Amino acid sequence: MILMGDTTALAQAHDKKDDEKSKDELVEELTLLSNNYNDVISRHNNDNVERKRAEEELQRANRALKALSKCKEAMIRAEDEPSLLNDICTIVVDVGGYRLAWIGYIESDEMRTVRPVARAGYDEGYVDNLKIALNDPIRGNGPTGISLKTGKPYGSRDVESDVVMQPWRLDAIKRGYISTLNLPIMYEKQILGALVIYSGRPGAFDEEELELLWDLAENLAYGIATIRDRVRRDQVEKELQRAKEELEVRVEERTEELKLAKAQAELYLDLLSHDINNMLQVALGYLELAQDMLELDHGEKELITRPYETLLKSSRLIDNVRKLQKSNTGEIKEQIMDLEQVLSNVISEYEGLPDKYIHERYKANGRCPVKANLLINDVFSNLIGNAIKHPNGDNVDISINLDTVRDNGYQYYKVSIEDNGPGIPDDMKDRIFYRAQRGLTNANGMGLGLYLVKSLVDSYNGKVWVEDRVNGDHTKGSRFVVMLPAIEN
Ligand code: ADP
Image (cartoon, rainbow, N blue to C red; front, side, top):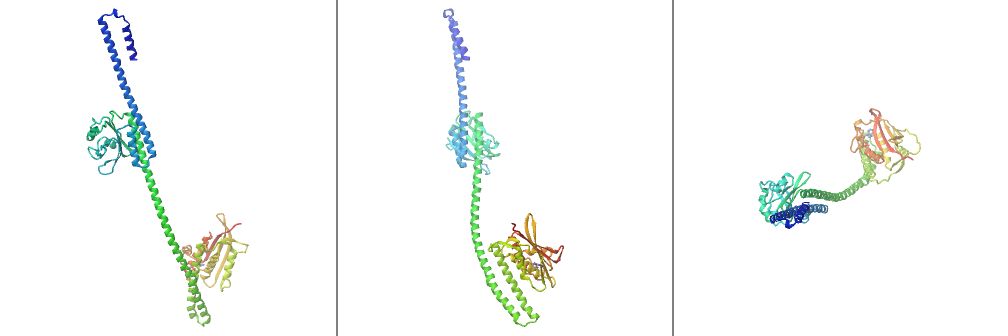
């Protein structure tokens, strides 16, 4: 606009006839025209300077923006922390067009030294000579120190005149660093270190450029944290894998040891169940012979019956151990068995004993199929045998019941064996089913009979317990109850 107005004045002056004007008038006009011309040229020049400056600022912001986007790419690619830090410094210098960039981490030593961990650009020993430590009263209060202590960017747009640059000023000027920007690298309120950038141009780092570089430093902090998380996760995974491998080796070793121990235990058990039991049978045979052949009085007979009964108990104990082992190893295959038939067979073994009465209080109502194995006979012969073994007076009266019941929606066969023996006190009712728990009657044994009963019933998915025959008075005898799941059609 200004240029247009000046051209019109010049034309009007030119239109006035030369011969109508005095010499002075002409000189005046020429001076005016010349002044106007100079004015126009100077304004035009000023406009150019302004435009150039704006262009430069725009260019710088563009380069910073490009550097920011390249840094984001580098963070995605980054494999480890040191190479990420070096890549960032290189991009800041090469793409951002700065003279030098370096990154320093705050050490946890007493002086809180700032250790340079990456750098790129024109350095010439500058970074190694910085020797910044936050607890140093002078070198801890320069641009980097201020930025790290405040957690805010610190810019020096003129290194030469900034007093806080004093310890490094000469070195910086020698290397052509005119302005500097210090950006703290912060993650979750913790300051890890700083990204420091130097420019060879005066007045660099205007508002827009600063904002972009600040954004870059924030992204860098996030990138570092991501890599550290990944490294930690990898480490935990590696440790877990190592622990798993160690455990596998130990399990393998232990399994071998256990196999050996098992083979040895089986060998001993075989020795007991076959060889020792054979010897016991021989001894029992001789004692029976002695009882039959020798004419002994009552007292002398006792001398034979006592060892005879003891040897018989040992033989039964060995039998039970063998059976338990067979049941545990699944050596005896499961099959469908008729519970009613099992009971009849077992009861028949005890029939005809003097003063022992066994009443079967159930009607044969056809088959009662259960899933068990041949050892099921031992369950009932132990329970009936115990009722006979533990009398209360001369007569033994045993009642056996068999019912069908439902429990939790499933059908069971419930066998109860009642006796008129001394009964089991409440505090013993559970314990007698466990190994090495002794009862209170005189005929205390090894406690393995009921342990075998419980182990077998458990393995058939059934239940066994004892209760008072007369509720609340255990001295009137016991009722052993066995429940076995029925096989339903
Ligand atoms: P054992 O085979 O040595 O007889 P059990 O495991 O069969 O051992 O029984 C454990 C203890 O429970 C017995 O020693 C006895 O005191 C007691 N007991 C078992 N059945 C009866 C019963 N019907 N009446 C009274 N006491 C019993």
